Image (cartoon, rainbow, N blue to C red; front, top):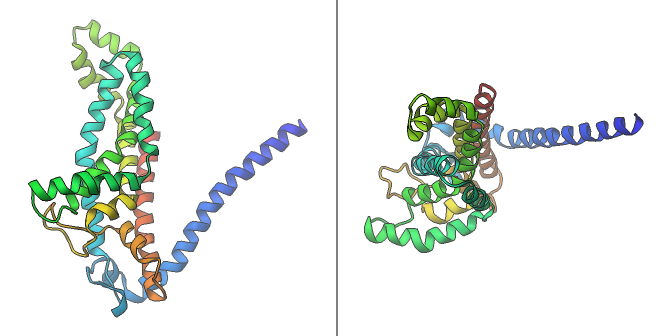
Length: 279
């Protein structure tokens, strides 16, 4: 019994250390960034697009809009492709093929983001520049790259959600005269909806928080995009590009940008948790 109690205490300590690390990170970010928000004012910081740290202007609205546009573009491109792939692998492909392809797709999540960015600069950006116009480094390029990067997350979770639907449901539907596709569309997908939505939200969190690939293909222009071919700068890109040489109020403003990003990602993760528990 003493040994079991010791193991229980060790596991509890490890669990608390993880929570404590998250708490310390949160406190540090807010302590570093919140003062500049109070000095500049919420309106000037959140709703202004004038980012000029050397002049004391720290408006991040253009970067917030760009981050949301890039994320929405990634969702529009990646989610239908991911759902189609998940449906095929879980319902229509031979089980042996699924056992090979699913782990292969999940390996895509292990590829460094800089590799995706490099491929985007070499292959995707010239295609956009030559056939659609503009500089090539653009909102469209960033959305397409992020759409590819979220595929493993959405596909894997969607397959698990679809496979969790009881086989009895499918057999009953087919016994009543429904075709396989009708069963998938009208029974399996609605039954697996909460798991699929969770995967989509987690993929959205990955898209919001991505940095290196976006820096390489987005163009990093400090303006609100009016076209998908315009260059953009996201919140994560701004932090990565300027934190290395920032100091004083400039550094505080970058930490404040991290607060905004932190809040966005926490909201997405909370939504995923709520939806998963409501399954």
